[in-house]
Structure formats: C-alpha cells, structure tokens
Length: 300
Image 1 (cartoon, rainbow, N blue to C red):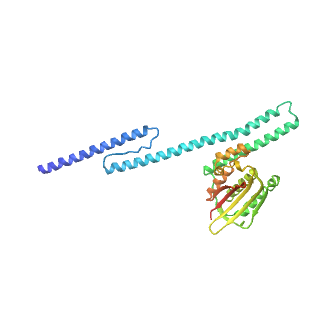
Image 2: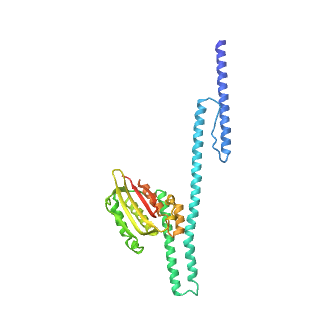
Image 3: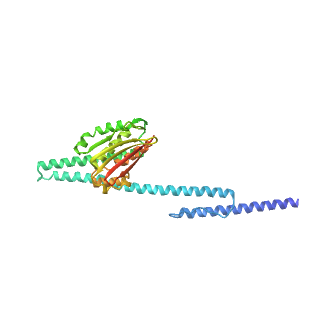
C-alpha cells in the first residue's frame, strides 16, 4: 500500500513538474511575442529552452505565421510605394496636357489675338485634348487588365494574317511619316493560340509605337523552328541613346517618355500584360545601329 502511495506521489510530482515547466515555457513564448509585436521592424522569431513536443509544434506554427506576416507586410509596403509613384506620375501626365489646354484657352480670349492665331490655338487644344483622352484610356485599360476584368477567349489565330490586317489600317500613317514597312512573308502563316481581340490590341499598340518613335524603316519578321515561333517588329529610331532597353515595359519609365516624346507611353506595358495573360512572352532589344526591336515569343 505504501509502495503504491509512493508511486502515486511521485507520479503527481512528475506531472506537476511537467505542468510547471510547460506553463513556464508558454509564458516565455507569450513574453517573446509581446516583444516582437511591440517592435517596429524585427526579424526575431520565437525560441525556447523547454523540450515539449506540443510546445515545439506550437512554436513552429507561430514562427511560420510570423514569417508569412512579415512577407505580406513587405509586399504591402512595396505595393503602397509603387501605388504612390504611379499616382504621382499619373497626376503629372494628366496635368501637363490639361494645363496646356487651359493656357491656349486664355490665349484665345486675348482680344489682340487674330483669327488665324485663334484657329492655331484651337488646333493645339484639340491635339492636347486627344492626348489627354488617350492617357485616360490607357490608364483605364491598365486598371481593367490588372483587376482581371479582361476575360481571355482562346482560339487558333493566324498571326501573319491578323498583323497584316492591322497594318493595313495604318497605311496612310506610315505614308505620312515616310516609314517604309517590309514584311518577311516566309513564315507569315504562323498559327498560335490566343484571344483575337487581345492580339489585335497588341499589334495596334506596337504599330503606334513604331509610328511615334520610328524613322525611315520598319521590318516585320515571322520565324518558326521545330520548337519555337516568334515575331519581331523592328524600327529605326532617331534617338537610340535615350532608350533604356531594360525599362521599356516599366509603366513608370514609359510615363517619363510621355513627357519627353509627347506620347501616351503606356502602350508597351499593356502589350506585355496582354501577351502574358495569353501565355506568350515579349522582350525588347536595341542594336548598335539604332534598331529598336520588340520580339514576341509565341507559345506553341
């Protein structure tokens, strides 16, 4: 009887001791968490000196949560910074043509202005209003694409035919700018899977980019081998030294181009987003001879 009583007392002491150290470990974890949550920026994780399986499992899950929270916080702050930069650029881009429009309105109200001058001011107002409309359209499209409002309807598309059809719409524009367009027809019958309307928008943006920045010549080349297919749209540029090739698809960089070259500047960003939605890739190149190339790598 005394033996059983001794065993029972020993068992109670062991359980009490385990409970005591487990409770002590939990309190230590609680204090560490309080310190971690009170710190503005820390990479500290929870540690302990107690060997309890349950407590180890709890601490592992807590540390996973801390790491995930910090990753989300970094991403949130990065997105917030990008949003602030984008809002600054958008504000500047919209204010520039708007201020110009208001300025020309003031000139038109000048009693000393002649009829010829007023007609010139009116034409400038129209051009600035068109630029403002294009900017608003591009920013609206960007918002729609990134919010997944663009629903992709994939089908088989003949790339060469669709590009040729789109080029025909800009025949007079190329003639007016005296840009000679040459299309390599060897692999023009290139088929890919894509959304026809999205691809047409891609080609329109690329053609407009050529018209805005290109001079003299534009070459379009379709290429196919056993595993890959790609289309290259290349044009000579007047100011190749002003192009930062690594940044041409960056919306903030292209927004700066808007101010330098008087264009909406976001077209290439939209091109990249639309192609990626369809599973294709796009890259840019700049040769020493001043040829700027956009290369679309088609998914096979």
